Image (tube, rainbow, N blue to C red; front, side, top):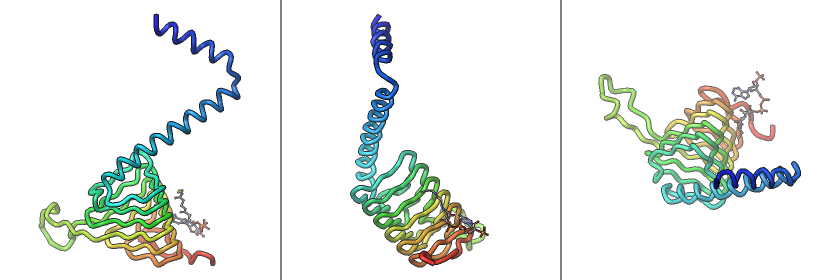
Length: 182
Ligand SMILES: CC(C)(COP(=O)(O)OP(=O)(O)OC[C@H]1O[C@@H](n2cnc3c(N)ncnc32)[C@H](O)[C@@H]1OP(=O)(O)O)[C@@H](O)C(=O)NCCC(=O)NCCS
């Protein structure tokens, strides 16, 4: 009976609202829900991460292991499905963007001890991403790397060495494509 009444009310409202008003209302409700979810995620991550600066956004489905060693500045955007392993420390500077599916790891296993059990050979090195860096979709940043201020890492690149400030790097291993502004 209750469901029947709800359906009746819904059908009535649906009939009297013009498509334009419905479109605006749905858009507003969606935006408000998005804002609430985003604020909720911010609070959850703020409590777990080493640092999370103001106005930074962490989108859904982000995985961060050892989050207490991950330090994120202000106005940073971390997109969906980004994966970070923070054991050796990860530092992300203000205004940086990490695009979806990028991976940043500060831990590896020693590849020089023959016959060793890999679980006993953790090697940790910090990753430093300076201010205003843009990491493209699916890029991989390996332990010990520093990416200089204002640089861009192209989609799908594998960064194995430090990247100087103000350049675009692409490929695996990532190499300089050009200096920004050239
Ligand atoms: C790196 C990037 C910014 C370069 O842009 P650009 O300066 O306009 O470079 P161009 O498109 O002129 O490409 C220059 C050359 O590099 C190659 N190239 C560009 N991006 C590449 C990449 N990610 N990997 C490998 N090669 C790449 C191009 O094929 C081209 O080579 P060619 O001259 O032999 O054809 C861009 O290609 C990119 O990867 N953007 C990331 C997109 C993304 O992640 N979006 C998510 C939004 S947050």
